[in-house]
Image (cartoon, rainbow, N blue to C red):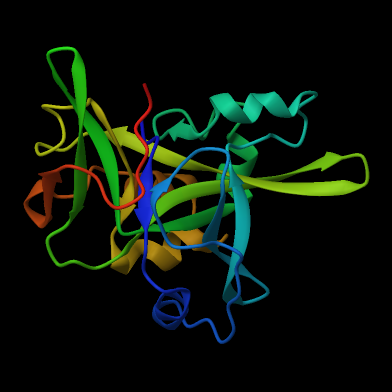
Length: 210
């Protein structure tokens, strides 16, 4: 599961990496990005990469109640091509949810201590995501979810799952709509543990749940 992540990198730097000429977002850099918040993500549309805002917590187009989004903040890589909540988005609406790192927790007695996981390079990265639009009256709501896979050796002592970090050389394959199912599923692997590190504690402004 991925329930909190960090994005403090400036949007213009993100736009530069993905060849986006103009990027705007209401998102404010945060050490505590939570489900239910608006997050920027990179999508491929009209022959180019663009950045759009999405509500974190996917609401399938067929949903009757938007509350389902609270349960769909993550999508398991093993079932996204089959599960009704995700299969259409997996086939047609994939995105990269940009992050500088993410949190898991270590149980110490009665307390949970936050652990911040990040790349040793210090670079930001793209988490594999899916997105959908849902109609509320006459208003369209754009939502997203983060894809998870088995944890790598660094994270496994603390949690059995981790978000999929898409390797840079496979980002365009994930974003574009012309890759076949097997090629896309092959992207959804645990990121190499030797390229990651972690530290205990939280960033400024992080609020821990009780």
